[in-house]
Picture (cartoon, rainbow, N blue to C red):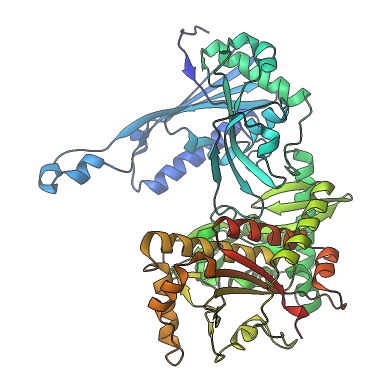
Length: 600
């Protein structure tokens, strides 16, 4: 192969061969799937587009070591800025379309398919890449106590609302930066001398300014020739296959293909058994306590939806099921699968239905554009025991939970409950016969209380119950029945509403989100109105703002709340307590916790 001498800054990605659309395929078949998916997405995005304009081409070449597949195309840009700026009378007879040349270079080496991209190449591979490839390479090279970090993007495993980005100017090492529950999405790290002089010696890295950037890709931050790229792929392949990864946090994402298969199989079998027992109320209560449905990437949009459509792939729309309550989504999905079966004893038919069920989130009408879309299976968050180990399934990814993590989390949950327990006695006992909605309504008409359950602004609830005390403290109370997987839902509700309120007060003085919620409440409660101006004045003092996480533990023994937390089997519930405290206090709001089952 005749290779010109030119150097470029390149990010190396790896294709996830375990992705269900690519399983058991050779390199060419995998690339054809990605190419077909890319062209279909462009047809959907640019209605009526002529494929000739895209000019998609795939060329192939190989040498003794590598197989090369170059996929080139021209992608239209959606925003024609000058056309927007100029008067229509001037632009009507001119073509302002912008077309960007892009490519993906796939490089097959041994049993793996790597790639580099240009232009809009990410649109081709995004769905299919190994999402933590670069981080996994770093884990095999890491010395957290020595390696200095300059930038990190991370989030907590308990939510996908936002990623936190931090930049460091001084000698900050990895060990002191990471928290035990972090999920790392990207890092920039100084290349320590040991790596520069050994593993990466051939790349002639600068002694003082050498950086590597890792995330879903690996980038040595060094302009490389084509020959250097080939050498780097060999090195990365060897590092990944032969070295043992270091533990960076106590929450490890699972990438082992065989283990993922086994965990998925375990989950599917659990769902199949549940479908078969759909009419067993006791079984329904058990599994509803360990499974939560949330969109895997659009959590905030998912919470804004006011109804959901359950639809089987390729099914007629008249067979849709509309679900208006997010809390009933899982049970209604299971029921929808059960009612669609020809034979309720046929495991294969049940599995096919589970795989084909889609959830479409809607903001307004049934006919409107989907706010969220994903398959039922991709929405499932849960925790399972497998071969005497604990695993979380969060946002369509599997994570292994170290025993050290469980111990730390259990300890923190108890400590935080004790420290942030709601000491004021304004809340009352939860009668065992009342469901969540009726318990909220039980505060209706009590002085200083306003029931905002199902009252929304921008489709987000501010709280279930608003309480303004005699000392003029404001309590935004969120309620959940049970101390189980649903606690993650409660945590997400609190964080979403707190952030929405924080941004509204900061940027608009409470004239946006807060005003909408209060106006909607006042329309329905003419005899117990909230004065928006008075509330805004109270909220101008952050020390008066309290977010309350209220839950009713259903353990039947007469233990104190701390003991109930300690003995609870739900790690998701415990972790939700830990995270709600951390995130609300970061907003400079007060946070309070209360197990309503302890009230007399």
